[in-house]
Length: 266
Image 1 (spheres, rainbow, N blue to C red):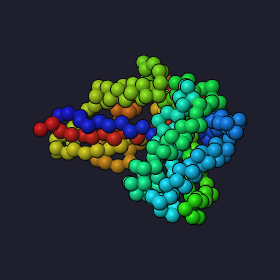
Image 2: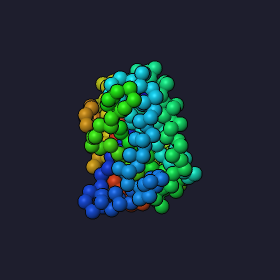
Image 3: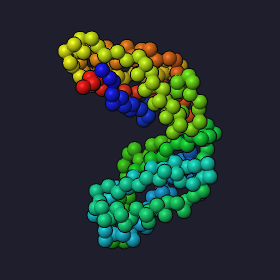
Image 4: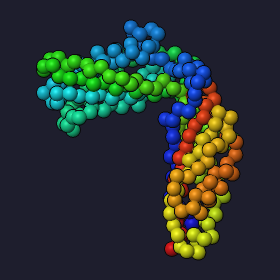
């Protein structure tokens, strides 16, 4: 018998802080100090990006439908350059995307170098996400459509780590977490006897929180064969105390979902 296909899904986007702590974390958020936006206010940065996007839409109006959404996601590296720039055109054809994407990338890259205001970042740059909506007035004018929730991001995240993992950078931290988690599961796994006897296989999702002190809390399973749920919770209950996860320099709770596949060997 074997445990196969163990996958780890990290709930990186879940923000669990509340009250004063949440406000303090917001005050520590990374700001983008663009020309014309010396304080890094998200609304100001949004307007600066918008002025770079509109001429691209104007120059390619014949390829576009009468309304277009643009999603811009990026980090800023240590040299002040856009890192991991990801663009998405909403409700448009593939032809329009292929033509406009490289032009818009060039248009946004002229904004660099960009200074940032967050002293906590080090090798952990924050993601910044902007969402734009435009409506065609005519072939030379695209009118911005006001909307809520046009910006999110600015959070410098350092994930929880097993005690023997060394903090290096975000990607390396996640890799160490995944390797240690898989080793923990393999070391502690026992196929439930009743399921083994009846040849039962299945899948459960174990959910838990690693709190701001590194403790595993709120262990639970959503559904699945009861013995598999019990085994998943038993395995996770043996996890050690972690190095706490951080957001903007403050210890914070992180939530995880871990699917476990119970398979019998042939």
